[in-house]
Image 1 (cartoon, rainbow, N blue to C red):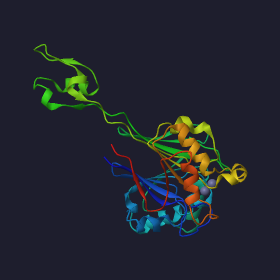
Image 2: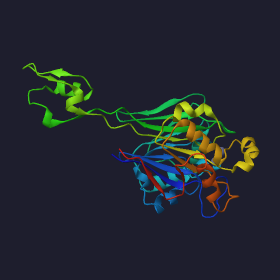
Image 3: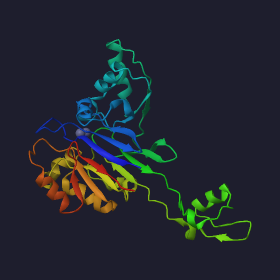
Image 4: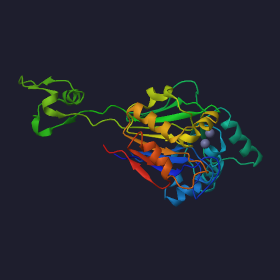
Length: 304
Ligand SMILES: [Zn+2]
Ligand SMILES: [Zn+2]
């Protein structure tokens, strides 16, 4: 089952050096979730051949323009291209008002339904809860109310080793084995779950930490994720500026990844002051080795 993140953009504030504003697509089992929607996101989707009509859920972290100004454009393109299925948007208080005002004054009645849910910026909030996946928001520290998002697979079942099972187990007993319980068939044969099943596959986890200054308060939400995305707007020599503007340095992103014991760190939200990103990458790597730049078009997969 696929679990991958495609970067569509990861530059902060203004466009620079062919780098675009923040947006990324998370694909879990062929369900596509869009995180943030900076200006031009619909063009980025087209460029990387991701069909926007496959996106049913959009998550907006906060209302700085580099994270949401592409949303109304994307929604209107969906409308013009005949979208009919419902669209679910999770965003900060005020975003629904902005969208409604746009549509009102352009006298546009969308031919699909939009369901808007306001994010709780004070505590962790479960947004989507299916049998396979949970998506939750969590508070980060930024100038505006801002949320990160965490995608985590539900605990998986053990796998039956068919060759070690006889035909006289009921489906309820097979289910019990998958849950890790031992069972006895009607001949009195005992089947120990540890003998006749394999350990379940691990549950995969991705956390998007949005725009935030360095804060260890988010560790409980992102702990032991396979991959986290953390902003690295500045280099360490501008740490004071990072603190003032509620952003982070590359070294701080590395420190957080280390403390959260994650598998991989993706850094982004690059400042337009940096043409080359080598120093940004080096600085984060000096603290957390398995770091990659969130360069647009790159796809990061989490294997099963
Ligand atoms: Zn930003
Ligand atoms: Zn921001």
